[in-house]
Amino acid sequence: MENKMTNKIRSKLAIQGGKPVRSKPLPPESPGIHYFDEKELDLVCKVIKARSPFRFYGPDVQHMCDKLEQEFRKIYGVKHALGVSSGTEALYISLAALGVGPGDEVLIPGYLWTSCINAVVRLGAIPKLVDIDATFTMSPDDFERKIGPHSKVVLVVHISGLPGDIEEIARIAKKHNLRVLEDCAQSNGATFKGKPVGTFGDIGIVSFQLNKSITAGEGGMIICDDEHLYKRCFGIHDLGYARNEVGILMDTSCDEQYHLWGCGARMSELTGPLALAQISKLNDINNAMRETKWKIRREIENIEGISLRRVIDPEGDTGAFLITIFENPELCRNFSEALKAEGIRGEGYAKPYITMEEWGCTGILTIRVWLIGAVYMKMGGPGPYLRIILPKAINTGKEPCPCVTTWPAGLLC
Ligand SMILES: Cc1ncc(COP(=O)(O)O)c(C=O)c1O
Image 1 (cartoon, helix red, strand yellow):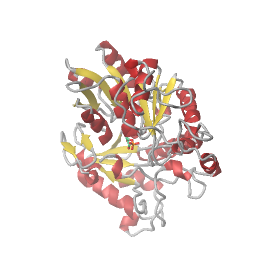
Image 2 (image 1 turned 60 degrees about the vertical axis):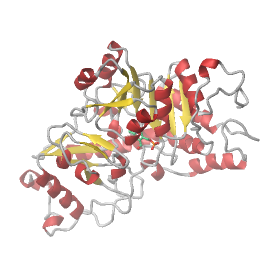
Image 3 (image 1 turned 180 degrees about the vertical axis):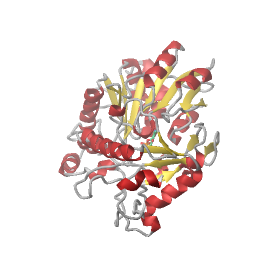
Image 4 (image 1 turned 30 degrees about the vertical axis):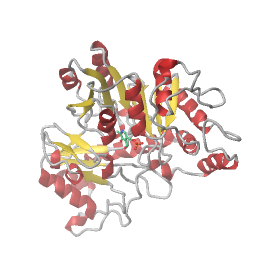
């Protein structure tokens, strides 16, 4: 490994006693917060000054959530968008709207976030794990193999900033009469062959939690084209009813087919302005992350013993993560130690890179449901050999560019 790199390294590695590349810890991930400015402040203040923090009615509603939904319809090119309280609830609401209930199977990829399983189980349905492939997302082959008589929905997770072969998965789902829910919580703004992820299936969701490309601290968005699904989502996200034009629940006059069990997951009118200010920065943030990620990727792609995640369409990558796979655990650990010695480290919750081992995924073909997560890998040898370098890389103007920051370990378990 060292031989191939010597032309790029002028002095000794820090781990061998050389001078570290960095002396200061990297800034925390959570790219959106680095882009907070007067815009966020101004929009939030408008709501506070208007004393109207509830989106549906109040003395002088500023319609921030409405404007945010409008932006999403425009950006994603969909007919409907619905702001909700979190990505987790967006998944639950979407599955409920798709009619998932006890006894139904929802196919989910092995590499996921706990909310994906959580949403299925809370509906009394059965999560059925599907292997991932070299894209680190659902394997189309295994997906088709796993479809059974009780399968109702496939929950595709566009994990770590980009999709796998979503076109093929959507095709297979259609062939078998399955509905498709796309989880774009980690890939807001990603595309596949020019088409936004989240628009290949029946419903797409994103999250505005702190570690996502853009953030309002909390919040989520559901997007879809189908009006019937939208109306079901609306009822479920609120109190189980539609609302009239002044935001009052239509408890007696609401169309009966949209009388549902609501889960009280409305978007706050204080979340709306934050996400609205942030959505205008989504492209800049993703472009900065992508540029830095691919800079690093190109530098390490020829290093012996390391291989990289398969990316079908690099242009559609948000750049949120760089995933690397090592030949053996020793190389993985050495690489990790060498990077840390170079000062590639963060403070507090910031983690510039992290191993699957550190996340608690220690075996091949292991299902390990941790306190808050589940990872199931079948990649011919990941477990401790798998390392993720997480370039939540942004040029804030305050840090040298590229600055490499991270999604925390918490993202996966
Ligand atoms: C893939 C994925 N789905 C869903 C969620 C849930 O989003 P939230 O934290 O907004 O509930 C997350 C959050 O980390 C996620 O990474």
